[in-house]
Image (tube, rainbow, N blue to C red; front, side, top):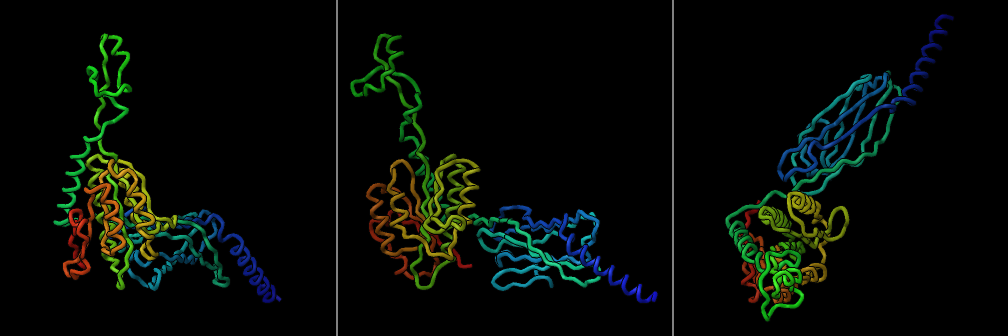
Length: 377
């Protein structure tokens, strides 16, 4: 009889233990994945933190955390991970009562992009491993892998040309909202420039002298359309890096920069458009915008989406077009623009080994064409 009571007692305890775990194992259990730095450069190392907090008195002898992220975030390979189309991670913890566990996973951002971890699978069990418990946690953490700055002899020379052109033109425009002094009226002065208070005070017609202002800025147009049979994605990446470095150079000189690219933004799905701005905040916006460019999707037609932007107030900005492609339709759109702004720049990343026919440039554009030699990686 005692044995029977013991059997019933053990069975009741196990049923109660299973019920308690099934009902309360998730309570006050916090699992967080977060990138220590939300933005890193290509080939730079980053850290992903796994934080497990068990704020209850119920121990979890086994807690498995599963998640997936892009394979271009290269984690140190281990027995808990596999790589196919994605990187899959399966980490095992023992979550004791009222404890917090933090693990730091080191990875390398192998490719420019915008990456996220959108969900976590949790698996656990009761004390006697009789019941498998599973839950999903919805949480989003994102990482920008920014394009690394581009440098090279050809490109540095082009940057100097653009900087010199911009600085030379920045005093050619008058600012209608800023006066730099008053002078006597001349027959060629417009009536709207007369300063009536100064005229009344001196008894002679006086006019305002307008101050000069800088150009409205530098516009960067990035053409990422590729008509080649064998897609040159590496050259497209070089073009993106050049855009990042050009923006950094111009913003460093205190010049406003805007950027347009005819490739889809990962978040919006539209072509990338960053209005003119200045300062460190603008550089951060441009770098993150370039990181979000999705080269896996087809680019928009340059003539349809970019040319109208180029034709908008061309004389008040310095324009730089970055394109590794030489196809005829694109060059014809540049010829159309050249009629309004003959002093723009076309930066073209090329390989030393590229055939001459792929580098054919229309005669009107040869003055604007600036090839930049890149090395194959």
